[in-house]
Amino acid sequence: MVTSGKEWIGDSDANTWDGEPDSDEEEVNMMFYRCKCGFSQAHTSMGVPACSRCPKCGSDLAPGPNAHSEPEPHEFVTKYDQNTGAPYQRCKRCFRTQAELDEVARVEWPTVDPQDDGIRPAGRSDECFYCRSRVGQEHARDCTIVTKVIEMSVVVDLDGYTARGVWTLTVPHEWDEDMCNSHKNESSWCSGNILHERERREIRWLDGAEPWPVLEAHVAKVPKDMCNTCGHIRFIFVRVVDATPRRALRS
Image (tube, rainbow, N blue to C red; front, side):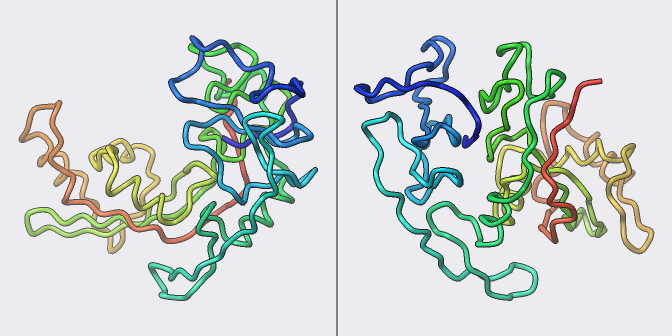
């Protein structure tokens, strides 16, 4: 997870950075990466894209001071918008569009607040549990706590009953269209979770048809620990409503 503004000091003769948490505090295979100036850092088990570049010093992100190399250029490939078919360019290494790269470079990113929702009982009291940024420092650029607002189309097709709606929801800021669609349709996330949206009223059903009674009756047919809505509800990314990066604070 890429972040910025930390003040760890690296040993010039080491292959890893000083200041890493003890191994019993870390998940298996998690590693720390940082740029030469320390402004941009990452905590991940998947490595960092070869095109990762610190917006401040321009260096790549490496696991230690002796492991730096020249960042590779972004390699843009043509993709097509799922809804309109319009072509657009996206880097095949970091999966960002040029507009997203420009936004990351200029946007005022949320910092970790003492009342930050990312501070959890299982972690330290002065850092985000998800990206390891400390209070007063910026959250990682791909920290799941930093969100944006999007709109998705919801299609219910159940036993001959059909309903369509538009759902306004928050997702991690780094998610693109493919990730939003994949999370709702192909991951372990259960489509039955939209039943919780009935009270929140974040879904605007079209043509006045609200499928809540039909869905609840269908769910009631099986034990509570089983799901029978997946395959009957589809979610389709529509647009970004508000790209302003935000993180929640505990009251």
